[in-house]
Amino acid sequence: MIRIIHGGVTAPTGFKAHGITCGIKRSKKKDLALVVSDKLCDAAGVFTSNKVQASCVVVNKDHLRDAKAQAIVCNSGNANCMTGEPGFENTRSMASATARHLGLKKKNVLVASTGVIGQPLPITKILRGLPELVKGLNRHGSDDAAAAILTTDKQTKQMAVEFNVGKRRVRLGAICKGSGMLHPQMQSPKHATMLCFVSTDAVISHAALRSALERAIEKTFNSITVDGDMSTNDMVLILANGMAQNRVIVEKTPEFRLFCKALEMVCLVLAKQMIKDAEGATKFVEITVRRAATSEDARLAAKAVASSNLVKCALFGCDPNWGRIAAATGYSGASVDPWKLTIQLGREIVLKNGGRVKKDASILNCIFAKKNIRIVVDLGLGKYAATCYTSDLSTNYVRINSAYRT
Image 1: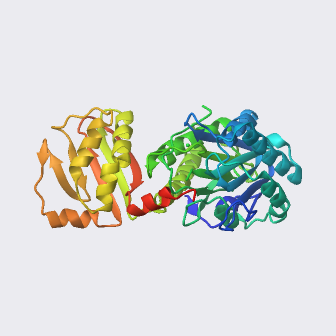
Image 2: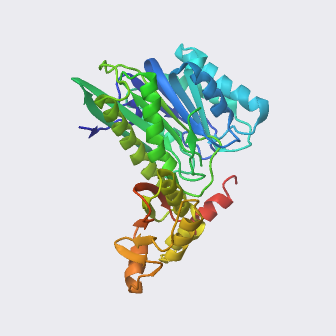
Image 3: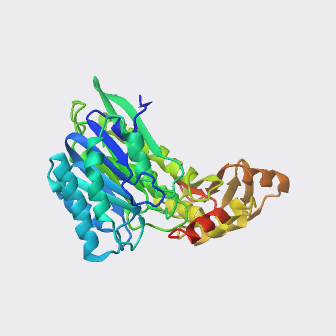
């Protein structure tokens, strides 16, 4: 049984966090966060598949070569991306200075940045703020850390659960941010930016930890979109310190499946929170594709509908224009037979057997006027399904992003 608990990223045993204002943001809001484990952790990460990557993404991949880490430091208000060699030097300085204050090795500190691309990182402000940040670390610091990683987000996003592995209680918690420039497609070094920092006190093999993270990402963060723009800084990092002292979790066991379920639950709640907090959003939309010929077809079709600007504009305008849904399905790259295609808005079937199903316009208008909308696309070709989550595209989104730097 998985139980929701309070505490976010500091809910698991042995984790502390804090967040402060160091002066990066002109708004004077919190802009520097730190998450630390009492013990060295097994660690894994997934990162943006954008070919333009921030220095923190590149440095973290290097630091995770030994699959170990103990701390995550994150600044908001500046992405430190496309800032040349000085940007890399600043990322390394953040890691080394944080390590020095914590008494850790530099390679065991991971770094994240989020904000405007192309602006020099005010590293002096960050270095000056580190002593206060470290001094304030505490077991109840998840709220402050969650606030310090935000950019255009209106709300903090955090989640924690607990479950039993044998007779031991295991906890898993996380904080994340993201509300715009949000179309993650993250890959294992195998993506406003979305960042998620996950902690657990489970004893789990590295192979199982990486596998669980990759499985969870595909069904959660990789299944959301706000605007179709993939960030340069997207990442999900997970730290497992083993302080629950449970029997080691390995792949292909009931304990592994339970851990995967818990991690996916946490990630899905956070992914939905990001969509509900999306820039300018007035609608939360769930798009499910059923009976696709392959799992990839199901994913392609769902993502195409979720990413369609025309569909998103119709959602904002409360216009049940299902033709746009059909068109997006058709160009998605999935196998589609228009004579077998069925589209359902809420509980109402609007397309079947190659043509529209006549409905009273007022009924369909009411469906698209709701804050939460469900769209089902049935391809009628197989047994595979996928779900994506999106928001509408509002005039307020344009206002926010037309003046993001100014």
